[in-house]
Image (cartoon, rainbow, N blue to C red; front, side):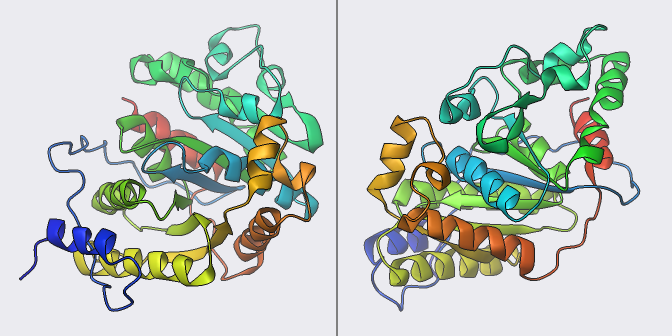
Length: 311
């Protein structure tokens, strides 16, 4: 019987072989994340909380987050983006803006929620996490209570809150994706991206009470490639993790995306008719109008989960 490492090698070596469908690897061997504190049951309420994550950096996670926000806004939704990629102000860079405040500033008595919500271009509202959230594990009970109190208002001003997490399976990333109602896992067809995506799937499956993770395959060259990657990751999750993971769609390789990043503009604004932009719009519609996803916790509960995890 093949072990998981051998089967993942088969994925890489036979990526174009439709028969090579059993993929798997214990990608997180030697790097098991610490088990988060089990959160207490909380009431349902509020905005739809979607965490966007990835196994490795550079796969287009933050770019997707910003452009999904624009697509949702175009559909009439009130959207708030929280840049939780700790220490990396990617949303600022992608929008060509800079933030005076980040989440940590809410611990100051004279700073209110409106101070840290940046009203960026194209109608996007976002909060920068900056390096401040790296100190979340050091918050006192009083500081956690203050953050929860000040951030509660986010759930009242948005229909959808997008959390742009960091990459990988670090404790801070797991805290965010476990607290969210829905998780979008972004990967590309490259071998390292697939391996790291599986590591995230494994870590998430270990601790999520009711897993709700869906896949987005970025930078594909044709439909066959996207279907192959999605099917193999799906079969891997079913076989080794006993978890169902669907695919929301794929984004085609598009040079316009590179140009948009250089211009510090979302591709939906810079090149709205481009192939990649059309793909992102289709993914946004799938999220909004596809299979109904009930709000399990809502924003206030997200805060309580996350702040419990950081104890």
